[in-house]
Every structure is written in C-alpha cells, then in structure tokens.
Length: 403
Image (tube, rainbow, N blue to C red):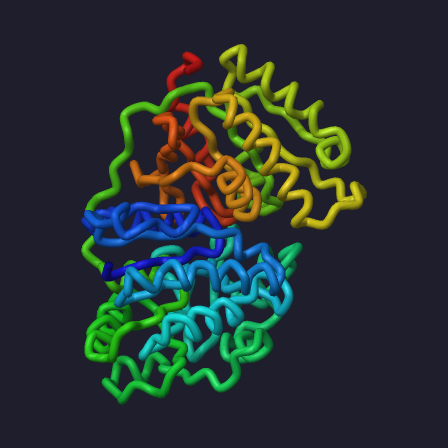
C-alpha cells in the first residue's frame, strides 16, 4: 500500500478521501485499521480518528494502536492529516505527540510538515501561517477572527516553528519559499515547508521524490494534492435520499450565516442545557419532525452555563446524532462541526466510507457502509467551509420521501 492517511477528525478525513478519489485513486476510509485483505484492491486508504479532540494519553494510545496495525501494510507515504489551521494544544489534539508515536513505530526516513493549502486559502510564508476568513480577507492565523479565539485550541502563534516547539517538537527546520524556488538543498528532518500556490506544491513533489522512503507527511489535504495533483472535475450524485437532517454544532460565524440563510427547513434551536441534562427531549423533537418527512435544521444554541466541557458537549451532540442515524430517521445527514461529526460517526461505527461527490472545496459527499448492508449519505462540514447557500444546495438535491 503506497499511501495511507491518518486523520485527526472526520471532516478532514472525508476531504482527503475526496482529494485522492478525484485524482483517480481507488481509496476508502475506515474507522478502524483495515486488514490486508480489505484493502488489497485499493491504491490508498485512510483511518479517521477523533484525535483533534483527544487529550494526550488517549491520543498516544490511539496512535500506538494504529501504528501496530499499519506495520503489515508497510506504507511508503504516511500522511498525518491535520486541520489546515494547525490549531492544536499541548493537552488537546497535540500534533507533535501524534508525530512522535508515528515516528517511533514506523521509522520514517523523511518527515515533512506542509504548512498550507492554497486551494482552501491557507498559505505558509517563511514559516508563518495565513488563512482566509469568512470576511473574505486574509489573516495571519493568530489574528484570524475565528481561530485566534477557538473555544478549545485557540491559535496564538503564527510562526509554525514556535507553535510546534510549544507542542513538544523543537528544532524544526524551515524549507522556505526562496529555498524551494531557488533549488537549494533540503534541510534536515523534520522540516517545515512553505507553500503559496500550486506551483510550489509541484516543485516540492519533485524535490521530495528523491528523498528516502518511508515518508511521514504532516498537514491538511494539500499533502494529497501535492502527491497526486491530477484532479478530475468534481461530480455530484443526481439525488440524495430524504429527509435531510442538518445538525449545526459549530460556533463558526460562517456556519451561523449558512444556517440563517437556509430555507425550506423545519428549524429547531436545541438548548445546550437541555441536551446536557435531558437529551431525550431533543431526540424526540427531531425524531418526530423527521418521521413526518420534513427536512430539519437543528442548531445548538450558544449557552455555556450547562456545566459541560466543550468535548463533553460535542459527545452529547454526537450521541444524539448517532441515535437518530442508527434508527434511520434521516435519509441524508449533514453535520457542521469537526469534533461533533467525528464523534458521531465513531459512535455510529460504519465499516467503511466511500467518496461520492464534491459540494464545494473542503466539503465532500460520502457514503457510509454498514455490516448489515445499509448505506447512509453523510456530509461533514468544518466550521469555515462552504458557501453561504450550502445547506439549500444540499436540500435541493434531496428527495422528499422518507426512506
């Protein structure tokens, strides 16, 4: 198996799956490491985790389990897929911790951190990360209107070398844009690589093709774009089964604007306190609306007085969604919020997931496959992703009739 990606959340995992599939690779996503027989006919596969929201001990244990399972596959390229904003902290979702475990177990000969994804408006210049905001402007990541105040992993440092040093990975070498474009010698491992546009990705692919394998690449889906740049035109399925359930657990201003602009939904505001202490009430309300054939847009309110941590609230939301999906209450499910979607899919536990179409950059339509033969179209959207009319675009594709 040439290419294996280990994703720190499910929205990112589905985006990398989409990137590889559009490049013509036979790729599939799993929640648990597959056997050699399961991936015999694939070019690439991924393992989706909830590492982005895990504390250090849980993250270490998860990565060690994955390392042992990957050894028989002997991947040439291991892609640790992380968010394009690189938000991470010492205690939660520590990217450096995941790198240490993968390095210790799989012994990569080359280690690269790719510091941007131009296709999503993420750029790394002289080691500093910039990201486009919902306002359309480009921001240094520590001044980004959303990421500087992220409720779990706020980004307070734009220099990724300093960021990784704080996470526990000191002495990160920088292969900056001038060195890349002037053909200078690659620095020692591990290295952070600037990227400003697609031409830089092509240059970097050529430079690293001669570096020793196996290689550990750390970064967003731009890693897959760099390794396999020939993407086909995105396609969409003709229709999706109904009814549609959209669950908004993200507090991103972009997601809030998408929810406000949505039409044709029964809109439900779920009190965070109710979900924390009386989750059955929210379940019954959503179940009744979906049973009547209505498309439902459920938005978790902003109340923070419920007494639960952000991770615990994401788990409550995930449990609610998994309960609804397990009963096939909805024909198609869209979840906005990385932590919530990752936990919900892990609670539902499909055996594998395939890519079926592209809604917009960073937002893929996938299909979950279960052991009993059932299938469920799922769309997982990070807080910053998608156009303002995204929810209406999905609704227009969905059949009215319940399954």
